[in-house]
Amino acid sequence: MLNLLLALLACAADPAGTPELVDTVPYLDGEVLIRVVGDDVAQMRVEDDHDVAEVERLDGIAVVRVGFETERPVRSVVDSLAGDARVEFVEPNHLVRAFGTGVNDAYAGYQWNLAASGAPAAWSMSTGRGVTVAVLDTGVRTGGPDGLTTLLAGSNTYSGGSNATDNNGHGTFVAGTIGQRTNNGVGVAGIAYDAKILPVKVMGDDGAGDVAAIANGLVYATDHGAQVANLSLGSAYPSSTLESACRYAYDRGVTVIAASGNSYDTSLSYPARYDSVIAVGATGYSGSRAGYSNRGTGLDLVAPGGDLSKDENGDGYADGILQETIEGGAWTYTFWEGTSMAAPHVSAAAALLISAGASGPDEVYRLLTTTARDGGSSGYDTSYGYGRVDAAAALGALGSGSTGNDSSGAGAEPESSVEESVTTDTKAPTIRDVSGYTQGRKFTLQWTTDEPATTYADFSGFGLYGSDTLTTTHALSLNGKLGQAYTFTLVSTDATGNTAETSAYSISL
Image (tube, helix red, strand yellow):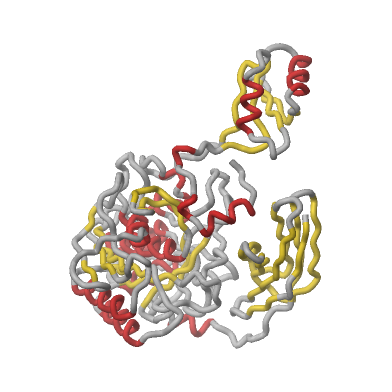
């Protein structure tokens, strides 16, 4: 069903609260489809008796789309009309989705992130066969109704030994995005589904770890055949130890990929910020950068990370990334969001490239960045890096020898050219002409900035909503709750990362 934006906010903090797929049937609120026995007079009497009104006639099949107040539950209207002898049939206006994922997994149609990262088109060229991807995380759980195509024996550098079992769910989710068993008619799909997953437990069951465990884990992965290492983790604090481990892996041919961080910050977390690491931020369904995703100098790419505050594709679910994992010790299919979810999309794309013949981290980096779909301002910027990852385009460039939008053909290290593109602009944008108005449950905000900027309304207790486009004119419309007062500030960030924030505003419905 089409959900109110503010009603979805609770899902952002509680992915486990997402309803089971099997219990949810997506349809449009505020309307149903009916066929009435009789003439137009009978139709009008039925509409009057059930307090519904014609919206559209489907000529030729005698079906009428009728509407009603969205506060009325669709199912109650259906039940009421179904009990009327004059109504031949009544049904919700169900949502329909294209079957374009290219795989037969039962829930793959809900994985909008597959097409968004170019996976279906890539599978005719590579599925990651023969490549080992190390997942440095909370471990990886074996079993499950779906499972991974190939899970290797791993290591536990957090507490010692070889037991890399995941009791948190995070590492299993990340591993599934890369190497979930696919085309088995069950569950969900992975992007590099024929790749081998090497689990390295570097964090405890609470999702926390330490630099020594991660550094040891990266050395272990390198020495045990990993060609790609995924680090969906990070810290605000630099570490020479961790930087040395990343360089150790890079120097030995491992493509190291890390999440940029989820703290709404204008600087990247570590290890994503290191030269030897590909730094990945997150986007939502529309391709815009997710508000929580850290941005700043050194960001290389963005990839689907989800946004649980929105349902932009109208499938009845918040737009998170769907994968199989464990929650509360039980197997489930669930939607999560974060740059942790974005990074494995790039790791999987790297595995596809290496399987198809790409030779090492420099070539992988060049192919991914030069074929990425540009976002934000033209060319490199600190919100999108070189753009949104496109696995199919990268594989196409590898097969053709093309360098995409790269004019030099050289495979630079991740941050070498980024540093040169940053200007000395230190002036924050000015926010002015702030206004707003309400219409029932809907309120609209408008404002301008004196230079192109991405701007959000930061609602107290709800988070960030708004525009991720570098423009000077902005508008934001949200549905809220009648009688509720909402307090917010406006936050604008220009192309070079300068940020301005207004004083608090409030609006009442």
